[in-house]
Image (cartoon, rainbow, N blue to C red):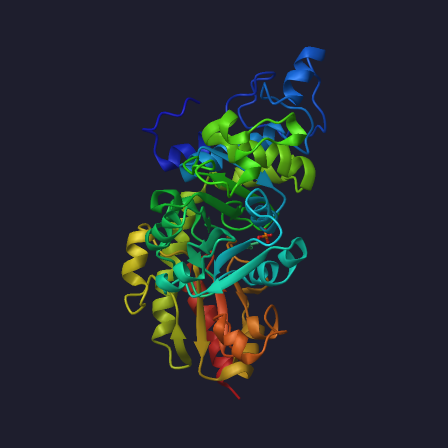
Length: 431
Ligand SMILES: *Cc1c(COP(=O)(O)O)cnc(C)c1O
């Protein structure tokens, strides 16, 4: 469909990027389960390989089903373009890849998804990159951590595990002043609750594995480019501003303007890193996105009700949900995530580590899994699972202390979820 800027979110989440299949008229987006696409003739092939014409060559780079998803997520985020890839973690590497070189660093928030902490603190060092972890509530500390080798600033909009809200406007002001792109992981908020580009983000990354798909079926990732960053304003981003030897000296920014990052992500990132999303995964995610706003509204309503109930419970020490008026992030949440603070929070139990283990083992509707953002309610005791290699001190710094359970509220009946939590809390307190 033509994308009039007047269409609302609920319309775009169903229609953006999609059109009836030109070959068959199929109304739903077909799964183009094909590795390669036939060239019209040798000239067409040459034009595609020279990036003079946009089209489908080979599914490591581009696939028509994946392309619909890319256009849909880009539209929902208000970006110029998007590249899908195999997972959220792939998206993070793909976002940093055009910006970084050996010896460069990225300034990142301490409040991140556990796997991202490991990726940034350990694995990216193998590329000669490094991450500087800073408390993003301390805007001056973020500015102070930036040096001549910094190439990006990275945070989550609604941050793991406690559902903290990052002041994106304040962080964007810092990255702007330093001439650096701000990358925002918008997985926990989704574009329905938060639109980071409107708060100054340059790039938005997603684990589409979570709320965008929403049914726990496939892993995937996406990088959306705002199209607003001037990659040629300094000599810091030669991959985008300088001649690319692999494309006869083509300059991505000069040639593709606001689509430079997106074209680079496909033509160099996917081509050479190969972290490709498959068309089946794109199909499941497209199915999920059609109901995104409906699901997010329910996640938020349930989370508000349940967090409020937990806060008043005798066995509970603290609840971190930014949608509660008692949260220090409540006002910021209303500004950054006007439609709600998401479905993710942590609860601290007075009974400590032992009570937490008993609690997660006693739950019946909630599943104890290392995942979030599913239609079903999920729970994890980080200290005995994802964060068990860390010291108690490190666990606490990450918001995952021994007495803390992370909860991802699903879209079931809130009263059933409360009933389940109630019986499990009773069992946890029993001895
Ligand atoms: C899950 C998650 C990731 C990693 O995504 P995968 O699809 O599991 O690779 C990154 N960031 C956040 C906020 C996540 O929740």
